[in-house]
Image (cartoon, rainbow, N blue to C red; front, side):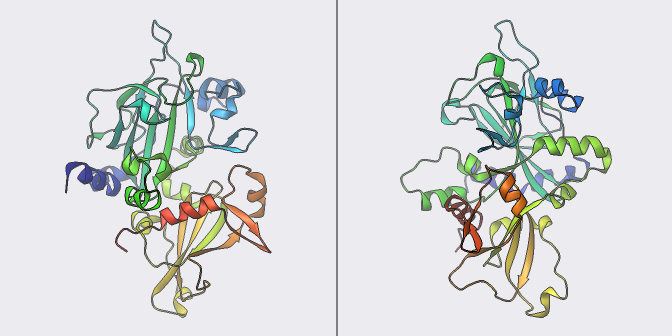
Length: 346
């Protein structure tokens, strides 16, 4: 087993940072604290807009292209500049963790120069991503433990896509789940001939939750904040019954599996499948074990519940589409579920 693969396993299973789990709190990863101002001016000072000039476009969610485009993170505006007018804000680790990935080649990603830190909090694996960096601190290296608030990089404007103007300089920040640690195997199988430069740290393999909502809930609750409760209180957009008693995601996110009741087990002693619950932006936030077969034989998964209000309200989050009297996954979401349930051992 080579060193890189060992490191991937360390980051994905996060055994080496478990001792921090009970004490972790989240920090905003730059000196910008305007998020907690509670005013329009505070929001304008915190969120970096797109070229539209609308500050809301720097938020997470259906915030771009009149609500049709999803932004999987937040863009935190600069507060400091150097003599050349470039952003010079330090970037900090949002929580205790371990450095999982460093991309120091901006031309390989629209994230530009970026790094990822892995965290284990209340049994939940979470990964923080810091993008568009101008520089990464020399002491930051793969596998290194970092503490919340530790300096890790400097804000910048790096990207392989459209140039980021100095007035829009920002840190693109995500808090995400890894969908499948075997992403590279899935990619080579499903996308033959295509190149994956980032292994399991490819953006396709990351699913983000809303950092703004998390920061504000923690600010409101203080020490009473719980990441597990934050997941449990997400509004559910839809549910899927998945015809498999085991796939990698269940092992990594066992903390999100609901306990079985005696009524659940009345049909069978063994789990036959799971019902996954997804929030408004398609993040799996809960799993319920099912006993006894009730999926159609030809289906690997099927939609079992839809929140109609969320489906109508969130234009960018169309994971499901109407079919007859019900719903099915969109083609893009079907591929995404194929990744989530992919098991290299089968």
